[in-house]
Length: 412
Image 1 (cartoon, helix red, strand yellow):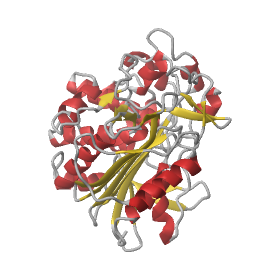
Image 2 (image 1 turned 120 degrees about the vertical axis):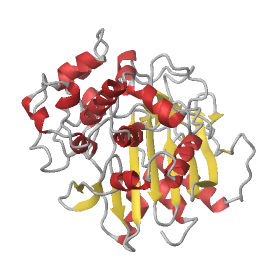
Image 3 (image 1 turned 60 degrees about the vertical axis):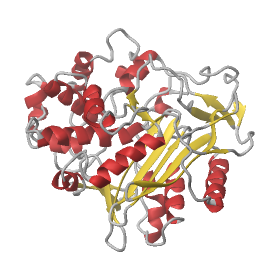
Image 4 (image 1 turned 180 degrees about the horizontal axis):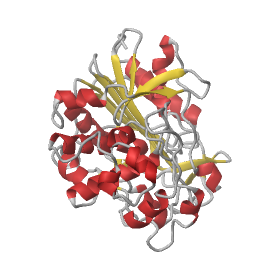
């Protein structure tokens, strides 16, 4: 797969009709880079023909009971076939409680191993919601000012425009920072020291501003990488350790971890691309995996642990109501590729309103081999998590997420 193909894609349009909520989750994908395909599992170099495996489902290992929903199972299996997905884990919640949870398809197609709800998948840009929550926690402690300039935390040696960019603007993607690091950065991703904070900051300091900070909206992975460095400097530790300490561990999210080339593949679903109608597992270099641990997209976890986060958000465990409300207050309209408007962005969340006026917040994620969707219907109490192990360039978990949650409530 070529670098230019893998460097990501523009936000998908969000339809303006009232039926558009069934596609809410497809708003943004943050793609990175593939350095090779195949080789993560025995026999997968040549790939496995798509849809060649028998439909299969799995339930929670803890034996929790739930009412059978044949309609949900049939719908998700149909989506797996039509989208040619190897597997997906799906969790539906109401008021922070799991209503339905199942795994569909396979976490390892070469060995025909069914995907499990307890397995980790890379969640891509949903990671930004965790980083934004960490920033808001520091704000509550009086350790970070959302309206301070990023130069106050990263040093005066940055480009002149850094003195105009605020933490709030970075959180809201209105800072004018680059969408992704440039081609030169990725060309040397496996060089010694290429993914250190020092080297990445040196590279990012050379990038021009895309527009006057605060004047409009443009999604920026570079901005969230910088936020990770800011959290690290404030706390004196790797920002991922701070997120683990303040969010993952207190909530019992035992599967949640940051991407690292030394991570074990145990309890992790393999990620796949669809090449000529064959599933081939994704194989990333060490440098690529080290970059993925940066602030924009560093987390992998199970859908069940995403459900624990959802319950904490619902119950106000992590942040006081005023701080959470601030994150869901629109900062900027998000432009549709056709020139219209389909949503807004707050601080780490996409923000939209249904025709009824009810608030919906969400984030999606796309990685090489994984595409994910998380939607919260705030006023009605429903939430849905869909994690898939198919590449961001073809998968659309938003169709699954919105289709499934509407089977549980007619009021959405």
